[in-house]
Image 1 (cartoon, rainbow, N blue to C red):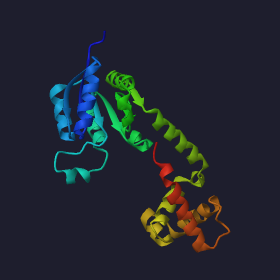
Image 2 (image 1 turned 180 degrees about the horizontal axis):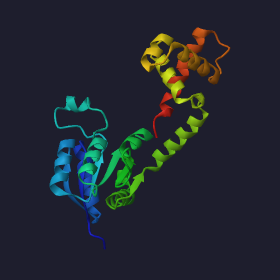
Image 3 (image 1 turned 90 degrees about the horizontal axis):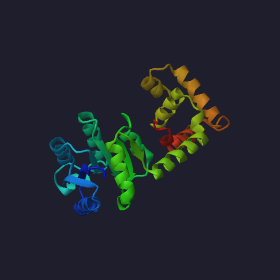
Image 4 (image 1 turned 180 degrees about the vertical axis):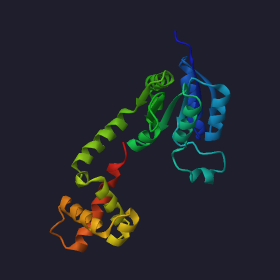
Length: 237
């Protein structure tokens, strides 16, 4: 039988944290070295205990008041994961998240995927899958939740269908500035282009978005609306 996996758990919800600890320890396959409720406590526990793996919620606010925690962005677990991997590459990190949006997984894997896993929080109830993710991360592998993979595939399909896919990177830059309310002169200043170059890019945008026959003011509005609707599809990754 394999040696129990030595892990640290981090979740700011006490009941979730202790419930997860009990679930994993009762399996006989895990030894929980520490269970903490904030990102600083997580990093301290990892430095002290040197676990095989970490299981952390994506939302790991710093210690402080409830009001301060409520204002924190939902990325602290991922930030902590990057610190842990930079200091101790051999430690596996499993992120539990309520977000099926694939952009969070991209953020976790931005420096590489070795020893990292991204699971939806519902997977806590699936002990077999949770243990498998912890062991895979500890062994240097990577895991991504199937629902996040589905979201990625869906986004790729929508990306291929989006009119923005017809635009060059520079045309997207021009359209992004247009969406900020800038006219051609303002766009030229922001992008260090001549106004004549901007005008050519704008005309190309209208043509590629099938807006060539609309009145000028309507074309700019329609182009911006297309950008605002589909721009999120064009995140890096």
